[in-house]
Length: 126
Image 1 (tube, rainbow, N blue to C red):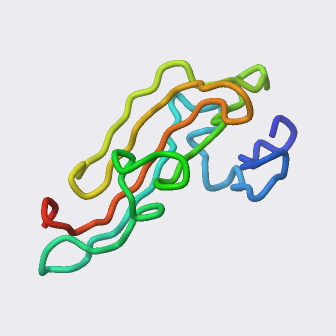
Image 2: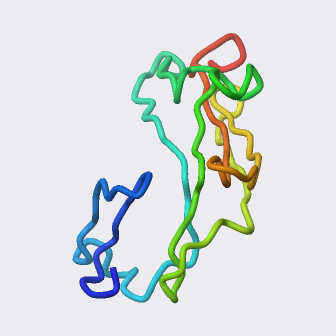
Image 3: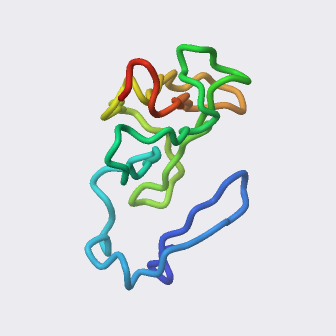
């Protein structure tokens, strides 16, 4: 927010949350990169957690209606203009437990999209 310097999160033209500038002191003049994603905590000592990410289905099992997705990803640049991502790299620290598939800008209401999900512990992820 150019007036308050707070960081806002909006979905479908609705503001759903913000972070006060006081907790992002190093971002006063902006960010150098953005990340979208998720994280699980594996506190167990007997193998990987069985915690699902998203629907619990990998993108390789099917996209629409199967694995979850982030759609119409956008950000506000230093001139307060809404932009689509241009350079994206995908990263999954445990791809046999969880994974993602970047489709890029598919147009329409979906815009820039990636699918994600996974089961956690399974026959290939221990």
